[in-house]
Image (tube, rainbow, N blue to C red; front, top):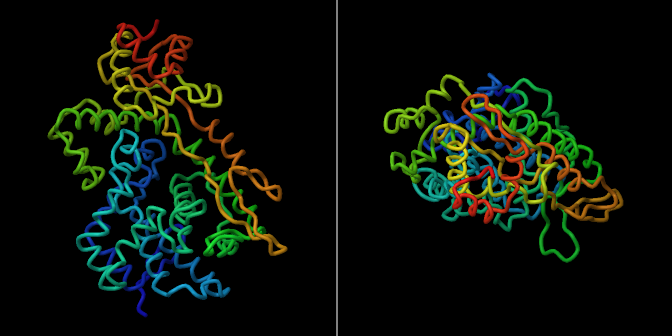
Length: 424
């Protein structure tokens, strides 16, 4: 088989088989060259200009490497060879539907990037190549893997508690940002992956050998450190909040079509907005005039579910932002609320193969033979996630009144809006 060789700053050498070469050369994949992996984080970490393109190649590389390791141990006996081909294709294509500037637009209610990928994979040139190389049902099989809905024993490599996507982006993002927070014992982790069949289950699934639990812990701590110091850095979140409001206003004003969002590159979208819907936030982002923190509070200090309406009720958030701006003497769009969308720091549900051959389940209830990673991850998550109010210039706000407002139930917030005053 002929391979193309690429040089990569993280994994050094990536070998592409003929199918991967054909897929990479197609327009949907080439667009990923111009979609930054970390969105607006480059405004804080200048090196964070790497793209979804190289991340997808890295995930493909890890899929090839992991399948080779499993094959050497005889773990793939009984699994069709084309299943492995489909897994490698899914690893390569898993981010093909990503919006410009990473995940930010999903926070304003845009369709999840995995669903955006569906027509790109099941129709058009990508589907044609997959069908020609792997059979008529290949595009749909790839999509099921990406969505986590496949019955393949290899599903966990693409979407699951320990998918290869996480390993590549944590390592790659840390490298490109120039930080040491993404340290993961990758070699140990990959060598510890196994196909494990629990009693009462029809088929095996991707799990980890007990000897790999310390490497799994390294993944958890790397993810926590990267969220705390990079992904949810206050200035990154400021830029993200500005971008979300910019796109939201353009969608609401009709100058941008939600259906076309995923066809843009990063700079292509900013240029389109600058031409079709001039907005002060475009130049503010381009010139790095980021909004300042007027209020912030970690999730660990908020009551359970306090402030969640900021993360999941976009229409209410914009209405509150506008009213708060008026009450503080600012213009609409000059005050922004931000609370990162709730996500598990490390959702765990996978089998662990003990040294004695017994199989245990590592879940949210934990397992007596291991550190309770899930409980720990929730605690780390609450310390990394912060609720913030950003303003276009430094403003003094009454912390007590803001805290009272943001922790109100959404029904009570709407009542205050109807009364005409939020900061009672």
